[in-house]
Image 1 (cartoon, rainbow, N blue to C red):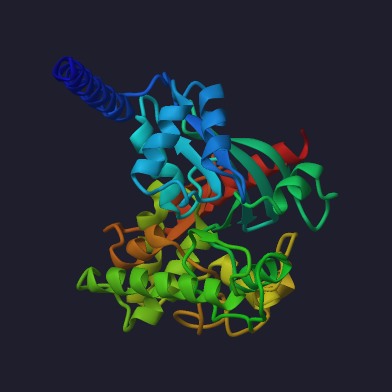
Image 2: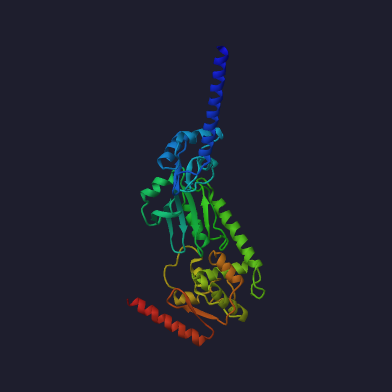
Length: 383
């Protein structure tokens, strides 16, 4: 009898172990299998949250089919206590194993809310935007000019949320004073800065964190610009009439201020290069404007004849060759245009009414182009 009981118990144990092994294999397979998501979703993990709350949120979003298995898998992989606060993009079809890795890996948030401080040539704006997981594109929630508008509640709401990302976007052609002025107004940054040298900051988008120093942001911008200038100088054409990387930076800043049309940059560069080669004055209005403002603020009006005649270190209607410093912070494209201008016979250009310019080889052609532009100006003034 006891042998029969023992035999039955052994058989039951073997079956139980077999079934348990099958359950474990099934669980492992399900944990690593493609998930039920048909399109990406954004998952927010609040500070102090736990795997139980996260699994409930994931089940609610349809990202996982079994919250218990999700938690067991996190426990088994020793990641249950490594949850990171933030907003994380979970791609379509992500397995539970992949999702556990996403919410425990750490690093910057990959979706959710982003605040962008935009430093433009004529104005600065603050933009609040949300990532649409389905399209991978940001959707604007609010935008305002901090110098003129009331602070919207959407900005106030997200400003102190743990998973909000912050970014500073610097446009090509802004001055160093404009960058410094904006950085000083961003309350999430710390420390003081002095105005950086003109032209020393690379226009780009820079992610920042609460508590970063303003100087650390400036350092990143300057390091990036040094790389861009060195690369452009190394790849310059052998016959450009420039004696140093700094002269390249100066010319690039003038090109940046003269045209916002990408296809024109090398043509504009060719005009200035031709003038330098012929010993002609550059005669470019943006340098005159810089002589008036010295990069502080925006002129906000047309130039006066007296200002065109006034002698300043930057007035290229008065001085020979290049001004002593850049007049703005040029981007990569303008640096490359200064280093490798088109080969053209042009020594003149003027606005053509389309946002671009009309180029000319002779003064007679240029005067015709100027007359055409004056007519366009007059017609617009009468509309």
